Image 1: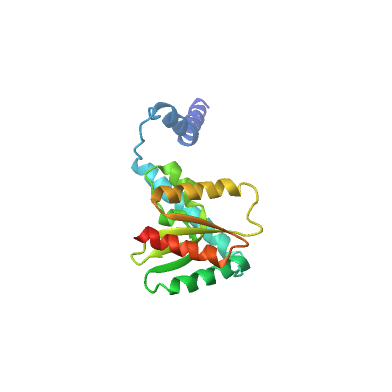
Image 2 (image 1 turned 90 degrees about the vertical axis):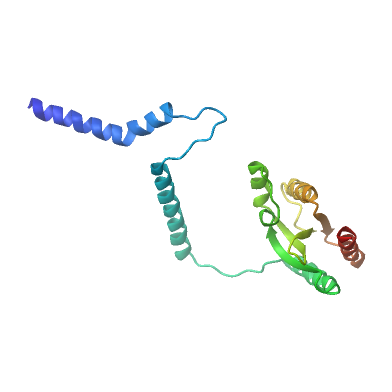
Length: 193
């Protein structure tokens, strides 16, 4: 009976340290000092790889089990503005190209990770690029449903980031005129000179 009790205690300790004690020990003893970066071990890298693979697989399963339908890239007002901007830009052949619904993280860069995360999830309605592929202007269409919740703060973030990068940032309101559009093109030509 004594030997059976000792085997049971030993098995209990092994299970405890395997599943609970090791995690607690690692967190308390090997915690990084403030301001230092941790260096992942091979085990950590493998665990991260497995968990990211599991996450990707769960995303794939979710997509497989869902029904998708297509929807328009732009609403009616945005599409109307898009067509007018395309027409204006076509009068300057080979100089500019127009894109819709572009993530700011694709056209802006900073070494500040927090600032980058702040802009990466934001989309611009329209981006105009030069012939080398660099963004020269961001145009935001302020349609009727634009001013909801924190829209003004989101626009301020976009404006600040674009201005910092030397990109023209223009806001066109729902009742824009042809003169407003021509002013955008004029500002592009002025900034290119």
